[in-house]
Length: 346
Ligand SMILES: Nc1ncnc2c1ncn2[C@@H]1O[C@H](COP(=O)(O)OP(=O)(O)OP(=O)(O)O)[C@@H](O)[C@H]1O
Ligand code: SF4
Ligand SMILES: [Mg+2]
Image 1 (cartoon, rainbow, N blue to C red):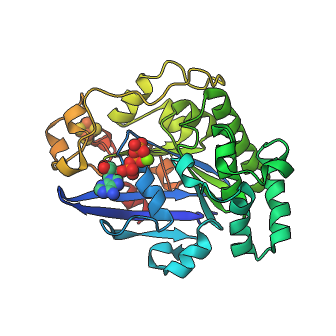
Image 2: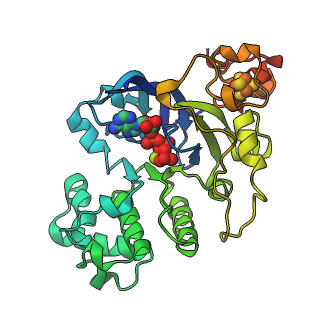
């Protein structure tokens, strides 16, 4: 029996219009998220990770952006068709986000308690006293010492690690179904990074929250993720379980990323590998030609790569059919056993 995923993103296309021209920043993104799982989104800078996250919350800056096509089904409801009032009910309540730049996401003029309590008052109807009690409880859950005192402090009085914990407390206050964490530990030192990941894992175990973790840190992927999607130039170019994508990468881009990593699966947080640059640079979305976007950097590029490859299943048809999100990569090299993911879904 298959259960309906908590979130289904289908053919998401986001376009930006600027003085440089018009470009598809997201060019048909598809993925699914199941209740209680962690999905990691990886890929080089500019490939569309944050834009995907912003689209889920209806936060694409419009203009210059525009959602051109697609569906974002949250518990079956298409959020792209929802009005602003409905999105406000979902945002920070059912789907929360820890933004890529926590330092600028906290409001400097409100106390920590006010900022955690805001969504509790708005979405849960708590009065000021109840919201304060719950905020103290949240601070304690995210490991902030002396929460009764910290609650009245302002962001500038906290260290980077504490501020990040406050961001997590805000995001988790209403016990969302989905937590999106966009590079939640980039600005933090490795010890605090490790603590934040431990905390996310613990909270997920206790509350069953599904997590979308956007990261450059492949060590974090192997520690945290149940499944992984790899993005490149606005598209998903590989998907699968963590074991499949890290252990048996199929797309030459993913293979390059993994080959650059000294050792995965280590529980050491110190010196964890970041995504390493592969020869060449990601083509600018303003300059994408036709065909596979990885073509100019790909050691195995061939004539057929002038055509855009669809996601092709990396497993045999029987195995692929058994999963709605089989291990797949958008590369013509997988065309030996051509089972398109669209064909499986049909
Ligand atoms: N306001 C904007 N106007 C035009 N283009 C934009 C705007 N914001 C982002 N983009 C473009 O959208 C693309 C995707 O950006 P996005 O922020 O999603 O990348 P990312 O994968 O999160 O990168 P990073 O790892 O650096 O955070 C980039 O090519 C970027 O140049
Ligand atoms: S489709 Fe061609 S260029 Fe693209 S990754 Fe595969 S082999 Fe390389
Ligand atoms: Mg980003």
